[in-house]
Image (tube, rainbow, N blue to C red; front, side, top):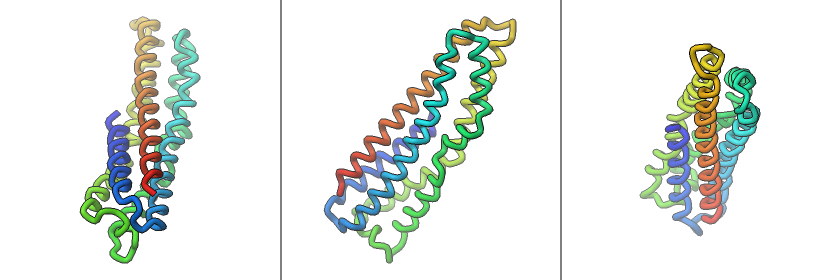
Length: 194
């Protein structure tokens, strides 16, 4: 999923920029670190919620009829959809962007001024992917709903479709786990910078 990759790259790059200035304006940097940890933690928690919600689908892999029901239930789960995009993610990033733009905010001077524009660009990717996060999730659930329809259609082999569902869901879960690992790495890198 390209949107997850964009988030991971943005966080890794932001963590690198923040790590560079270790020791400069320590109290201000602690606030920045706390903000970045919050953002990473919210994303990690959001993905964990989705991973947990996918367990009933995994448990139904061997029963195509039950699997079709689980796929439709997941696709219709508005609460899980809302949690896929961490609440206030863009707001948190907007606050950081504003602080980095303000000549009166010491945050602007707590990192290498030559890298502030790059950090702003990385953080702006969050705003750019905000809609894309829901779009990618909706695309995934739409695919699952179509697969459920195919499993219930006599023209398709339900066992073959169930195997394909397994492939699609397992790939999606692997991407989420990889994104979570990157969030943890970014948090660790940011923490080591103070």
